[in-house]
Length: 349
Length: 260
View: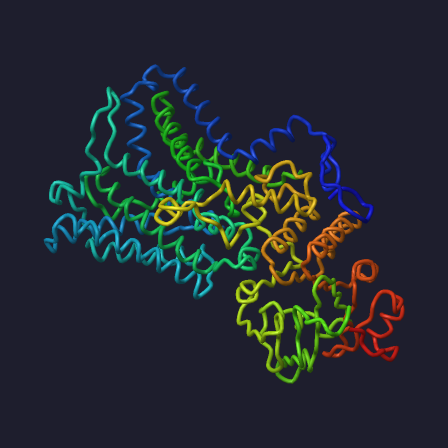
């Protein structure tokens, strides 16, 4: 629009901002707010780089290929689970059952193979189907029964964990008793001094896939729109229930793949791990700059967020800081990340 | 406006009851090509129900809706939209986190041609952006620096501009605007009015629902006055004053015979 006067609208915009466009002079802080708003990956990346620089100054052993390979292995499981969590959080939901689904899926894979003698590949696939079904169950409750995601996944967290104890009879299955395909994700191969697991490769492929799906397909746009403003999305003709259901289902699938990676990482399937995965996955998502209010965030941010957690845990350990302070540092980071998110959301042109 | 012309959109004897409550009791409506038809009426006069029936959000109990002279039956807003009727809602129905181009194409994204689109479902971002830019420029919204700008960084008027541009871009027959200026300040409201005029001047007939009498009298070619669930009459800004219109609307004055 050109100006207030009625009549034909001037279509040539001059160099001077006019019409709808009214910009105030920005302070450096406001400019930073705009930059972070437009490029949300920059914040987490800066934190990761600073942490890497700081820890390499503190300990000479930090920035070695062997150690970085270790960090990579340590973050792989959390990164996969946080990827599924990112999808759910993008729709303004939250998934507290992520750890339960992953651990239960790993128990199903392992027990199918050892107790029932199902061959490796079918056991793996059945486990993935079960994890996907658990995610779909969450999605069903969220969309059809219209319960808040927090309550739904709080309930299914308990349900899946107790079923998990029933199926496993509270016993750990050793990796050596399983078909080798289930523990294959834990095997490493070297790239120079850097040892990487096949699980990490799977993790990176998953991130690449969802980077594409969210950024370059209509489904991805609909996930963002639904999380951003569900009413506006509905009025635009998006079937929001379907989008939400698909997100929980796909998240379940990702968690189940995470279960496979988990078996490789632990070289076992244990019903007693995983409770901390819930909060760790949310931590990685939040540190990666994805907003808990939905509609904003990137899967690559989540990868960076998971790496931040890994780098801090590893770095603090190398620096000889008592283990109890690791949680303190991560907690502090989370609070700072959420505060910055709130601030960025207030951006206005 | 002559009576020999076929209305683009016509309603005949629409009825909608909610239990004992009659929201519309046999209402008519005609929208002719190239005009802005304003709908005014007191609260509870059935404006909203009438509009909802026209844009598919409500299924009338009786009566018929004709688009280009042919009867249509909308079961959902998507049906109406497919038929070429676009609606802009009062609530600034855009996704704030998505950019302008994404919002314009939300719900009807275009995929790349060939295998990238059919197998990999890849969006044709470049084409959607250039199309979005073209639509915005067509409507004279040229001052937005960047079509890739998130809608939340825009002002209320700019956001409404995006919503109007979306309806003008995809509405092939009719654009319905429900209180488009209600959430806006005076200056921004005026710009949106100009935008509505531009949509009309490009050949799309517009139905405008508004409580704002000055806006109605400034924009409308004809004014449909809804009262007690029926069309009381149709006037023009030339035939009656605002005071007279309000008097008819509230029942203080006898409605004159409708103008065509």
